[in-house]
Amino acid sequence: MDDQGIRRERTQNLWLSFERKFPPIAKATRLDPQPQLPFERIGGLAVPKEEIMTYACAATHREVYARWGTFPPSGLLLIGPGGCGKTLLAQALATRADTAFLRVDVPRLVIELMHSVGKLGDLLSGWSQSFEEMPPVTVFFDELEFSQAQEFGGNRPDLPIGPVMDFLLELVDRTIADEDTLVVGSTAHPDTLRHAFVSAGRFERVVEVTPSFPDDHVAALEIHAADAEKRAGRPLFDGIAWADVVRGFREASTGEWVRILHAALRRKARCEAAGEPVQPVRTSDLLDEVERARRTHTQLPAVGGIYL
Image: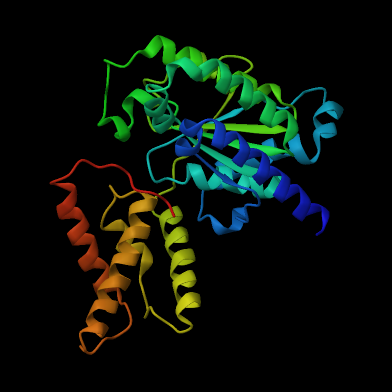
């Protein structure tokens, strides 16, 4: 096994050992010991990509900051609506920096910790020890504005905000304190995010993730369409006017556009399974799916979707 394989296995083993001791962590985190998502696989988002790549220098070329008389930010905060690509950017950072990627679902963690109050001190100690022993990691605290998250059904003013904030801030501080760890946070609710998260020494660099309409949505759709054709081993789309499709539904997030594309492909698969004649996906097929998605928007609250 080469050095990279040894590092990957060590990271996995140390984290699994920690998870076994603290089930709330296992339910609210996911570790990818070797992420492989280059920035080129994310459609558009040129400005936030540049910010993220600058932060990657903290792991790849830390000495460069010193030559310019400065230092890397302690952490980045990505702000933007659900489904805009915040998680993908954090994964791409880990890929560029050649570190493991740990996603912390903050709302889920809060839910789990509400049932494990007596173990918080031990959990924090175990967290610090794990990062001291592990190879470099990029940690992504996903949705720091936990009280507004969908896991809670929206706004939840009844939560014990003070104790939860005390714990989360301590967790963030201990993570940032590890020099080999890159730390990224995110929120879709920057207007209500508590200021303590963006104070000096925490998430002190704020990066807005707002896809350019329609170009960034089109870029993402073209990437996912090419992926689908690669998986199928044949052409699946015929003369799609991507920009025209996107302009027909300005309210959709990038994540929702990817879901619309896959909805069109799944409808074709169902027709083929039923023995019906099937043609490649055309612009009209996508516009039909857009109309279905638009009707759904009038009946359900917009939750953004996940940019796959």
